[in-house]
Length: 287
Ligand SMILES: Nc1ncnc2c1ncn2[C@@H]1O[C@H](COP(=O)(O)OP(=O)(O)OP(=O)(O)O)[C@@H](O)[C@H]1O
Ligand SMILES: [Mg+2]
Picture: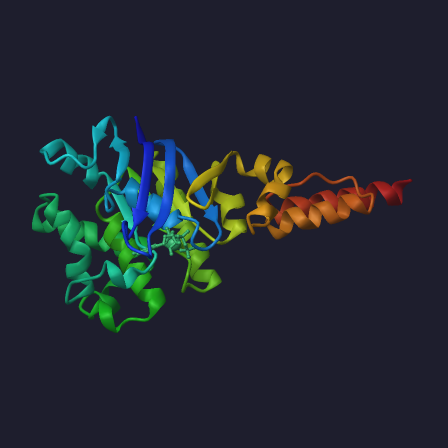
């Protein structure tokens, strides 16, 4: 069953001189098992879109449903539906609230009715998932951590709730490349194991190309492209450039090599491109 937006529109500061329409009549369905990357220029509406998917913002027009249940209804089914969607905010300090890292991460599992032992297990698993050493961090104040560590706490808090739909709004901001790779490895493992949907907002084209099964390109509050990342990066470069986006560097490199007469195919994986180049070289030497 999907998470779906139907004819959703949203305007900030409506009726004031600062009025800004951030979503224009958006229709979208995301099924469990999809890994969706959302890209778009700054201010295009990505965060507004995912805040609707998580029920944090209510649509001014249209509706948001999870597994057929309207997220904004005021009943037990809607609460359960909202609990099935977990979101790591763009700014993690906006979602951290407790006095210790442990308490912050324990909030969700406790709220779901887990026993103290179950909660303890969930906190430890989620901290391991996010790369936070239990002994070092459990009793520390989350507000005294670095930006990257705070982001890990936010990720752990959301993962501990075992959501069916996991939304990550720019999760790698503030993380160094190694930490980013480690967290993505865990997210991919979770995605494959539990068959959840992952919705990843990112400025990083390589992340989108590497991990996503589906790519949404947002511009001025509209989804202007929706398809398989490889297909979009290969066939829709002009549209991306028009909205101040670009293709990942590995696609540019392949294109450059093709222009120089090298018979290689575009690919999201640098290692794959390298193999192709070596193959071309070997065949040239053999001639
Ligand atoms: N709380 C707010 N009040 C007024 N306008 C807002 C508010 N939040 C966002 N906006 C405006 O709505 C539009 C969409 O913002 P949104 O944060 O969804 O974009 P985004 O694609 O997530 O941007 P970024 O890449 O910078 O995170 C922007 O023009 C933004 O200035
Ligand atoms: Mg944003």
